[in-house]
Every structure is written in structure tokens, then in C-alpha cells.
Image (tube, rainbow, N blue to C red):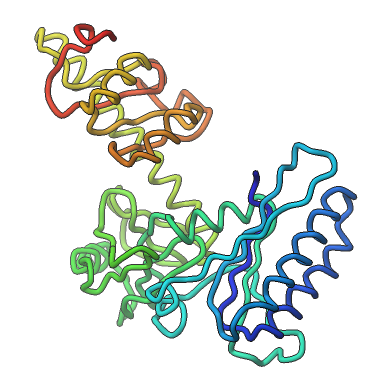
Length: 336
């Protein structure tokens, strides 16, 4: 089943929400492909029906999923109510949502809103809202913590940042909860500054180049900023993976029992099943292993994306897989 549509209702009454969904259904008539048009007509019809049974002011997701491999298919709608914490965050709690927003057709000045994402954007939005890793960005006016679809204002920058020293001083002052805020839907998880997650966003005129630990992108579009963040994270993961491979080769040269292994999916499987694996860097193409490891949550999984092997260094040469164990172990004695 593929998630094809995601709607987040933020406080609309049952009638207003049903009207909004019916308007989206009418708009779906303009979809060119017949099969897709039928699916989204079915989608918003079923969502509107569910909306009629909700209490006024409910904060919830509507998730429409269908098996698109079948020619004649209908989907199912799941309603997921926001927890008390999640509702508080987006309802006056200082977390701003970003996405295609729709007001009630009969009351366009209403403070209530519903957000809607379709097709590939639906799964992206769900993953981002529920599990997105936050970045920290500094605009000419403010410091924010955010993902692609949600963000929180942390502090004003005060006077304009004109020198690299000004930027470094500000960054050094940014700590979890002081003032960096959490945007996590699962608990208070304010980020800490690391090697890739902080950058300037917008137009700045500084007196010199920034250190590599502080990025810079000339945009304040949340989508473009988050794309830039994911690129920085990917490059950082490649750097860290290559550091592990260098350490592995140094250990091999000294004749030491391995602490780090690369290339072998068989060794990775043995280490994982034996609970020896601490952290793994692997390419996005290894979808089965990634899904399993993330589902269990026993191992720190760092996924490296992209097809340009020339930018991956030793990581590409060693099978696009390297992992660290909790202690030195010869996996060949365990069936690898």
C-alpha cells in the first residue's frame, strides 16, 4: 500500500473540514490521468465521510493509502489523532507548520487550517513531520530550528551579523533548550550544533569565508534550506565513513583484530544478528537492511545517498558499506 494523500486538520469544525475536503475533491477533477483522478476522487470522498464523524476542533491526520499496482483499486483512510503534546506544539505552542494550507471555503478568515499533500509529497511530509531530523538556520533576523514542514523561532539575532567572528560567537552560544527548541513530535529533543546541521540562510555580507562546520545558502525557502541541509549531512556521512575505512586499514596494517569492517554484507549480517554492530554507514540502495535496522532501532544507521561515486572516495571502493563494532572481533569465527 502506498501513501497517496495526507491531510492534517488543525482545529477545523467537522462541517468546515468536510467542506474543505469536498473542495479538494472537486479540484481533483482537473487531474489528467483517469486512474489517478478516480483515486483522488475516492480519497477525498472517504476523507469527507470520516470528517463528518469527528468532534469539532479535532487535530488529526488523514492518511489515504492504496495499492497502485492494481488497475481498478480503491484506497483506505486512516485517521490518526495528534497527541496532547503534538496538538499543543502546533496550536499556540510556537511550532509553525509549512505546506499547502487550505481555509474553510465558507470562512476564509478562519484561524483554523488544513494542510494537504498528494502523491510523493504525502510520504515525504509524513516522514518529515513524524521523524524529520531538525537543522538550525540563521537568517539575517532570527535563529530557527526546523525541518522541511515545521519550525520554531529560537531567538532574534539582534544586530546584523557582519563578520565571521560575529557568526562564530552566535553559534557558540546556541545550546539545546538555550535557546534551541525542539520541534520533535515525540518528546523534548532540541538539537545540539554539530558538524553539518547549522548554516546561514539568506543574504549576508561577511568579511571572510566561514569555517566548514557552518554552511551558507542564499535562500530562506524552507524546502531549499532543508535540501541544502540534507546535502551537508550526506557529505558529512561520507567523510565519517571514509575516516572509519582509514582506521580499518591502519588496524589491518598493524595486524589487529577488526573493530571496523567494510564491503562484506555477510559480515554486516553476522555482526548485526550477534548484536555486535554499533554504527553502520551504507548506501541508500541497500533498502532491505536499512528498513530492518531502522525498524529494530538497535543500531545507529547512517544512509549515504547519491550515484556519483567520484564524490564518495574509499566508501565507493569498499562496497558502499562500513560498520563499527562495540569491540574487536574476528567475524570469520562466527560464520562470516
